[in-house]
Amino acid sequence: MTYRSSLMEFVGYARVSTQQQDLTQQIDKLEAYGCKKIFKGKHSGKEATNKEALEALLKYVREGDTVVVTKLDRLGRSLSQVLVCLDTLVERGVNLVTIDQPIDTNKSDALSKAMVQLLGMFAELERNFIVTRTQEGKAATGNYGGRKPKLSESQRLEIKNRLKKGHSKMQLSKEFGVSRATILNISRS
Picture 1: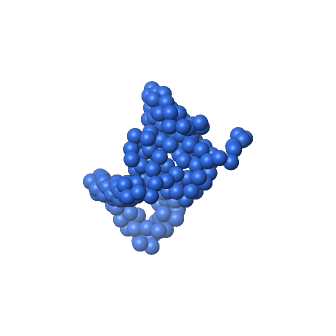
Picture 2 (picture 1 turned 90 degrees about the vertical axis):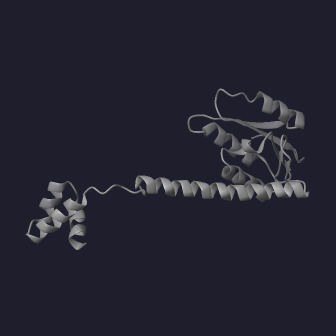
Picture 3 (picture 1 turned 180 degrees about the vertical axis):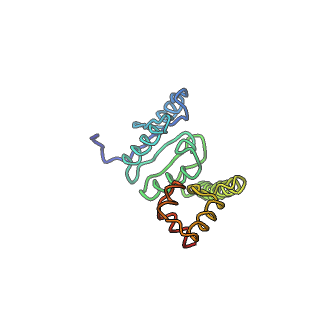
């Protein structure tokens, strides 16, 4: 466990999207701003290092600290992820400063407040776009989720007719490769 003094501190977070990208420029800016502790994330196949670095940062900071990033998008891959992170920081009394953008949650000036509120509106807009695109995609493909039925409508009708003729549910379940409960459900529908 790392010992921390009681003084509030600037804590940096640097992230890049691919393993090939370099963190050096972000780290240089964070150090120049006064960050002694810097958490680093690099994208990997499952984003594990970014997630782990951000979780470690969130565990490390405490009330009164200031998280410093070069740009707001360093906190997440989507606006909604950024806002979730920002909400977490605000709830814990941790400030956020972006070096290259006019965001400082410690300030109570109109521009800082407006930027945070605008981000909230954009996150809601982004979510609505995603929902709309998802619904349009489902409608276009006819795939609304769930498992595809094992039996076609014509097979279901055939099973109903054969049940009326006295065929056993067990025999039909074996023939059509479904459970006896499926045959029972068809007989009840």
